Image (cartoon, rainbow, N blue to C red):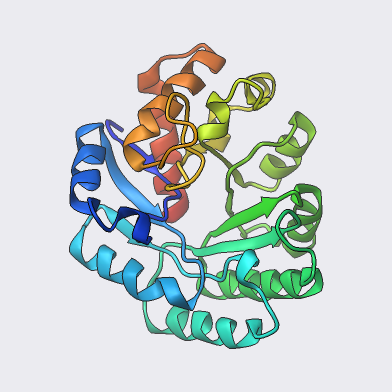
Length: 255
């Protein structure tokens, strides 16, 4: 595999309205040839699908982000289900749980996650999991829902080695992004213990830009920075990082 894949980027957001075409051109120049776009809620669907229709390198997924699970979450899920039944998506996502921003709807988050995982099983799709400050709880949920076929990515992985092994034992990938480049991110101690066969690359654009762009807008063209850091951590070549992580992503999304 001679190109990079960004498995998680919200490049349909207004953060890229002024220079989206240039941003995509630069991403391609840096060797990024495919970008998977996780949905957030009903407000992001149109812009995401429009971008997918205009750019062959951009691929849409469909789901309800846990931070947008509120009192009316069942109405949101109805739209997700409707879209999943109408056309093919690469994955069900971004779904999961979040105990960082708001704990008010914790029960509803778990319910929404379970419902969407079951849709992923129904449509034979992988899932893209968000689990900020809730990784142990989310791993436990996946362990209960696992059927031997369920697969996906624990997006923005920043956990410890024990959590990584629980995740990979389930057959899931770890999404490695800008946190790997942070001085106190902690992944330099964890990733040597995880096989490259369990890793995929991501940016989470426009968030979590890698060093030296930390604090600024993130974009898919920064994937090589993450790849180089991962190569340093694992003491292998950048070409091997590129080849294996991209193959992992293609195998997972099968598109």
